[in-house]
Amino acid sequence: MKGNVLFGVLCVLAAAVTACSSGKGKAQSQAPEFVLTYAENQAEDYPTTQGAYKFAELVRERTGGRIEIQVNAEAVLGDEKTVIEQLQFGGVDFARVSLSPLAEFVPKLNVLQMPYLYTGREHMWRVLEGPIGDDFMNSFDGSNLVALSWYDAGARSFYNTGRPIETLEDMRGLNIRVQESELMMDTIEALGATPVPTAFGDVYSGLQTGKIDGAENNWPSYESTRHYEVARYFTLDEHTRVPELQLAAQPTWDKLSPEYQDIIRECAQESAQYERQLWAAREKVSESIVRKAGCIVTELSPEEKARFQEAAAPMYEKYCSEYVDIIDAIMEAGDDGE
Image (cartoon, rainbow, N blue to C red; front, side, top):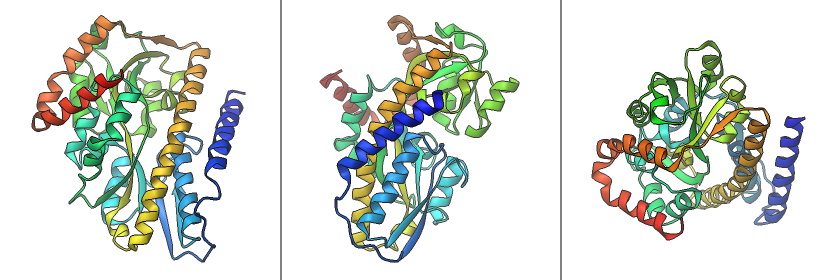
C-alpha cells in the first residue's frame, strides 16, 4: 500500500509539472542522429531518475528526435566513481552524480559540501543559482566533464542500527558507511566515528550483517533503499547538503553542434526545476513512511548541534584554506533570509 501511495503521488506530480511545460519548443520528429547514454544510480521512481527521463524527453522533443538519450537507472552502468571515469573518456555520455565522488576529480567542489555550511535549503539554492554557483559550473576545465545543471538531493543525516545519536559522544565506536570522498571520511573521523567506504548497493547487507553500524543520507534514500528496516535510528542533524550535478562527457559534447549544445543546456536546466519539485514532495512522503514504520527519529538540540559543528570545523582549514573568500561569501548568503 505504501508503495502504491508513493507511486500515485509521484505520478500526479509528474503529470502536473509535465502539463505546464508540454508543447514548448517541439520540432518535427526525425530519425536519431545521436543515440546517447545517461547513467543514474537510483531507482526508476526516484526524483533524480525522473529528472533524467524529463531531460531525455525534452531533448528528444526539441531536436525533433535527432538526439535520443537512453536513461540507465539503478547503477547498471556502475557506481558513481566508475561513471565519472567513463564520462571522462566518453564511455558514458551523460550522468547525474553527487558532489562527494565528483570532488575527487574537481577538488574545488569540496567547498559546496563542507559540513554544516548551509542554514537550510533556501540558503543553498541562493548560492547555487547565483554568481557563486555559476563560478563552480565553470570550474571543470581540464576535467573532461561538462556541467549542465544542479539537482537537489536534500540534506544528509546519520542513521544506525544500535542507538539514538543525541550527543557527540554517541558517535564513538560506530562504523559509518561513507561515499568515496576524503572529505567525508575525515569528517566522520572528526565526529568520533569510523568511516567505512562502501558501494551504495552494498549498504543494506552491510547494515544487516553488522559490517557497518550506520550510514548517512537523505530521507528519500533512507526510505527507498529500505535501510530504515535494518537501521531504525535516524538522527536529523543535516550535517551536509550535497547538491548533485548533471554532467556531459567532454568527448561527446565536442561532437555536438553549438545549436545542440544550447538545446541540451536549456533542457538540463528545465529538468532540474522539475526534479526539485519532485524532490520536495518525495521528501515529505519518505519521512512519513519512515515515521509510520516506527523508526526512532532524533533531532539534535541547538547546543549539541553546535558541538558537532565545532568538531567538524577543522575540515575547513584542511580542505578549503585557499577558498576562504568563497566560504565567507556562502555564509553571508545565509544571512539574507535564514
